[in-house]
Each structure stands twice: as structure tokens, then as C-alpha cells.
Length: 403
Image 1 (cartoon, rainbow, N blue to C red):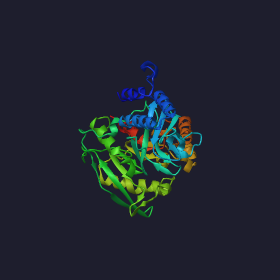
Image 2: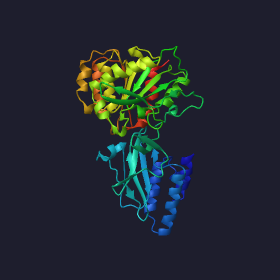
Image 3: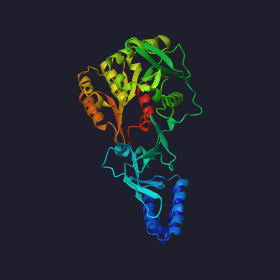
């Protein structure tokens, strides 16, 4: 319906008949409209038509405008230059992507046409005068990152994950406040939070998932894992699960993130888990002590850590979720996996195709295949983003803990 309303407005720009003008392709029609705007000499008429077009696009939330594998980004504002940067060009790192906008002469309207996969989803920002990076003010869709929100480009065939939205009828589990454990192995305090399903009983033994970057995996606008667990347990798609969300932030100064050291195939950090954290959880909560009932989950550096944990101690971690793994940070992870005796791991690995660790993930995928491991491998037309990782958590939980 919104495209029909949009097409109705576009028709007013041309003397062509409806059948000539209406192509059922909003991108093509918008291109023609922008060309007609550029040809208007009367400044008052140009201003009127520009306002009319912009009001229709923004009112019906058609900015950016997409069709099949084509997108037209739009921005309105006074500027010397406008460009678009995001996952699709590695946030300006990939110079092959032509990201500079074109100004409609005599107006403050800028646009950029690009070709992207029809099922893609990309975080991005509008860049003004090559220095000011802002959210797209006309796009209502946003995806949070660890550094705040980005605008979100949703291509036509991409579908949102409904289970990221809390079901009103789903009972909420108990999510603890920050708990502190002092690690003698590491020599400092570490904070974590524990999720208990609403049906938790000490008379039952539960599987348990350990999350690196737990402060983000548990955040509703980032990993959304608490919402997903509540929904999946309520729908009986998975058995009730306990979640342990471990934070790499220094609890005394949360501006200090220790993940680059902790997650980099750090034997002491692995020993902290196996000798201190896990025994503490098992002495406090009713959890299974079997490796097949225990998972380690991580993304980026955390994906590197999850791989290291599982292939170093398959007797402890029977399930591993590896998202967008930053194997480039410690390339000796490949040899560790090649030489590992692990054969029965339950593995889920995913990566994006846009500005993500795609090459590294594919190399590890090939190693898994040569070892004859049974694993799930998923590539998505997205970037290095919580928008991708959070959407996959239902698949992860069902693979590890499905009924």
C-alpha cells in the first residue's frame, strides 16, 4: 500500500499516462522523478515538487527506497558533499563501493543508487562534508551496536526475526543483577549475570550456556538473548536453559574492556572458566555437569575464544557457537583446531558477507570439513553487526537445546 501511495505522488511529475509511468518498480520510478526534478528551471516549481516528493517518501517510510537488488539512498540538507558509509563498504574501508551522493541541482536533495543483495541488511550512517557521521534522519529503522545506534538498510527480501520481540504471554525468567567472582588465576574480579528460566527448580538439572561479551548478548537492543530464551522456552522449542553472561568489562572501571586480552586464546582465561567460574555455577545452581549440556557462545573476538575453548576442552564444552570469528587476531587457532582430537562437538558458525571476517570463517569451515566434523555453517548478506547475530540466536538455541 505505501508503494501505491508513493507511485500516486510520482505520477504528478510527468505528463505520461499511468501505464507509461507506473512500472511497479519504485526505484525506477524514483529515478525518473529525480531526473525530472533536475530538468525543472522554475525555482518555485522545483521547490514545490521537491517538497512534495520528500513529504511522500518520508511520510510513508520509503527512505531508503528499494526494489529487488537496487537501493536509492536519499538525504535532504545543506551540504558541500553527502556520502553513505556502512557495512556495505566496510565503513568507508572498501573503496570499490561508490558511496558519494549526487545533488539534484537547485535543491538540497542528495541521492545515491547502489546494487546490493536483495536479502541483505546493513548498518550505515550518512556522512556530511566527509566529517560528520549521522543517523539517517528519514529512516525509522535502527540497529544498536556496541557504540550506539546505526541506521538500518533493509533490502526487500530480508525478513526480521519475530522471536526477537518479547511475546506478551511468555513468562519472564529471572535475570540476576551483577555478580562478582574474584579470579585467583587472573588476579582480578570478573562480573557476570545469571538467567534462570521461569520454571527453574532445584529438583531439575538444566543445560547451561556461557556467553562471552555477556553484557551485550543479554542486552535487549543488542544480542536479545534473554528475550529469545523466554520466547523459545515458552513455545517449547527448547528445553529450559540457564544462561551465564560473563562481562569482559573491568567492574571497577567499565570503560576498560579486557576482551582483546581475555579472548585471544588466553589459557589463563580458559582456566578461569574451567577451574573457577563453572565449579562456582555448578555449586550454586542446579545445572548438568555433562559436556553435551554445556555451551560456549561468542562473536568476533568472542568467536575466537569460543573456538579455542571448545577445541581445547571438548570434555567441558560440548556445544560452541562461533559468530563472525576474528581468527585474524590469532591465526594459530587454525593449527589448534587441525590438531585437536575433538570429534563430537556440536558447532554453529556464522559470518556476514559484507565487511566481516568472511575469509577467515571460510578457512575454518574448510578445516571442519576436512576433519569430518558435523557442524552448521551460515553466511548472511549482512555485516559485523548485532543485527545479524541476534537474529541467529533462535537457531543456535534450538540446535543446542531443542526439544
